[in-house]
Length: 354
Image (cartoon, rainbow, N blue to C red; front, side, top):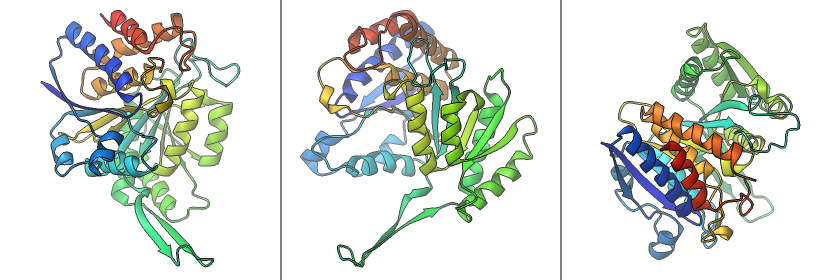
């Protein structure tokens, strides 16, 4: 029995979650997957009613599930940062989801702003460290609100944190089916961030000696941003820090056609670890209830959830169905211009899976 906790969240989150669950039901019936769903109402509405983002004991309870499926968080009446820090970051840190896995895949039929590039050119994965760096929240203010105010924000890097994300990335690259070869690119800024990124670089060199079948590569982060636009076909797998990963994965989402098709996983790869999967597009509150938002990213996140759970064939069925729908059915990836409603897109994918 595969136990899944669902957090539909805010805005259009419940709408796209419904479509992902529709596809899950279809593939589970076809492949005889037994699963159990439990829904949680964590998000903006609950926070406005109770003043709490996650109630006491919620993290321990969620840790008992094999996976968490998250629709989206973000509420127009809740100040920015409260839900993101209190829900997303809290779960990532408390459940030790130290891998943020972000495939950058251009599906057939999806437009990219990169002229002359197609699905064969934009197909790489970013492995982002997810529990260290600037996101640890270490820092503070001195003389806040005065002309002499000082603010500090400290980035934290540990040998353990660097090694485990780098090792995960090498293993992922080794297993990834890429006819162009196996290359892992470390993205950092070793010429300026000469302490934390020096540790990162030395760890990368040490671990690379154990993976002679993988080409160990390096880019400064600014060069990576340039080459992702100019020559995305160069990349196979990228491993990077929390902050830089946050930035370049948004760039990746744009070159793969937008947030509506971008999915990701927050992964604890250890035995018994609980991972969380989500679409990258946010809650899009202005489209709530209109049945016009693109659910492809949400459905792709469900495929990632199944893949991480060992249901590789089922995940592949979903991915191939997505490619057919984007390549032959949808007119656009933008809300209201897809040629189909949110629920109709879910129906199309589910039918192809069946």
